[in-house]
Length: 405
Image 1: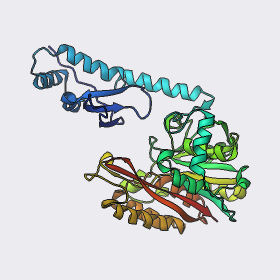
Image 2 (image 1 turned 90 degrees about the vertical axis):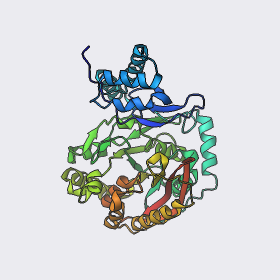
Image 3 (image 1 turned 120 degrees about the vertical axis):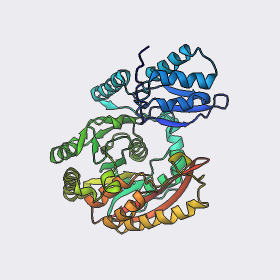
Image 4 (image 1 turned 180 degrees about the vertical axis):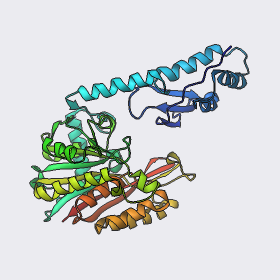
């Protein structure tokens, strides 16, 4: 019998212990939503996943299954395992390529960007949504300060970070309702040194938010090599969606936005140099800076950012508990970075990010750096800092801030 090489398992999947008590094992799902399937690989078979590396063969898999089950006849189990992974689109093969192409084509052809997280991260019924967000914002008193040019809010689920959301959005009074909101969101799934743009209107349970097409067109024209137009990542990304919902809650559905997904500045963090050493990144930062300087009071920047990601879920060996033990040191390091942000010190901030290749795993460093470079006169004020246990062993930190010029 001639052996055949097993396809590689996609490395961009989400892997986590099964949360189902009577089905222990490894839960696998696709964060890009090319596939809607969630699989739980039984605990006994988890070790077999290592064989899907593009080098092992079906004979290696068969041998492993015999060893795991103690049975000589494992053909049906082998076919079932292969079929489940293939059908889910979890293997790097033709099935996955077809799924990906179909999803990306569907997104490109849609006139609007549908709400991906309604019904899970926030209510999908307008009345319930308004009641929920009224509760989140209760007690917020918009400060009538001069020179407000932006805010930074979390992009963690609103039910986990509502106090920081309230602090940030509480800075926006009614006089800002007619601004164009330039939303700089973390691109969790996009390519490094790349900015994802879209012309699609953003739909939420509140209604449709329009996009300022003239600014999108200008950014694409002036920095074409840095821009990914109609970036599929917008279809699944939450860092901008949550900001749109809060803005619509404050100002009504027909707000005007410029949605920008900021990819990581990985070359600078993991290799060398500053982000703008990449000429394409520099062109985008210059273009955004020109727009900010020209438009001034017509714009309001909104940053959708989280900060440190610590604990077991994020690859650390310790169990993280908010505001305790190791997380006290993390808070100190977070605040050192925040101080540089408040001072408008983009270089000082980035030097802290680059330390230890960003072992704090800040999920928001690229939108922040992008803003500080595009609006160099911005000065920040910390309104609220929080740590939240996203699960019993892992913590995310985030903050609410406002910026004046």
